[in-house]
Structures are given as structure tokens and as C-alpha cells.
Length: 180
Image 1: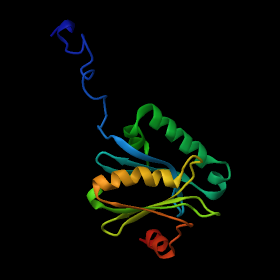
Image 2: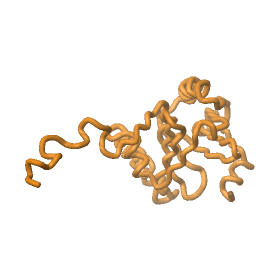
Image 3: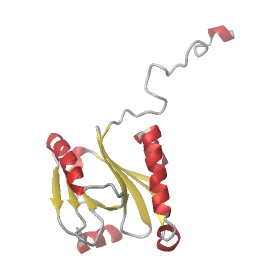
């Protein structure tokens, strides 16, 4: 076979197809820069997408050498840049852990405004009783906006969205997540 017979000589074989490695996941709602409440702290991106909810957790943050030197802000900023430039697939590939829930497995999303003292909280509740909770640290996060965006999606996909006032702290739930 000569070089002229090679199929990639005239054009790249993937030019007309999806980009290499692209999954086709379409993000409908994105909640940026959440953080777990248990040690070690993890940063999270929540992607409510065409095929379900993808939760990408990354970065191990410790109180002294993470929060104290603003490592969480740098890492979240870098991941936002990756999402903007390369999309959800690259964020999912670079995350330390990814959780996926189909919309059929999702019971409800509870958004707490944080009250006057705390950061807003997003709690994700699966039908099987599993929970994921994140304090939102993005300065531009508006609980009412997320609730409005998710309500439209929830009506189509069959899960509930609840907006509540206050910290949203649930001691039993936190202990179950921590020891579960």
C-alpha cells in the first residue's frame, strides 16, 4: 500500500464525525463549584445533562493547606476553564470521581439558600435513598435561578425540585453520608 492509498492522507478520518472522544452529552443545567462537607473536602461540578445527572468531584482540599491558600478557588477556576474550552467530556475525564444518576433514579433536588450565615446548598436525592450534598461557593450562584432552570427540566424528566430557606443542614443525613 503506497502513501497515496492511506485513507488519512486526504482528510482526517474523524472530521465529519463527533470530535475525538466526544460522548454527545448535552449539558442542560450546570451548577459550578460545589464543595462536599466531609473530610477530605472535594470540589464538585453538577451537570444536569441530556442523559441524566453527572457529578464530577475533583481536588482534595484540606482546611490548612487548601482553604487557607485558596486552592479550592484555583482548582474550581481551572475546571471552569476546561469546561468552557473543551466541554463536559474533558471535565468528566479529569475528575477524580464521577457519579451518574439517570433521571429515573433521581427523586428530588433540594436547593437551600444558605440563610444569612451560610453558603447555598444543593442536595441530590436518589430513589434508592442515596444522597449527595454540596455547598455552592461560586460567587455568581443564585439559588432561585437554579431552581427555575431545574424546574423546567424536572417537569420533563420526572423529578422534584424544592427551594427552601435556611442552611439546609440535616444532621442525620450528614452522618449517614459520612459513615455510609
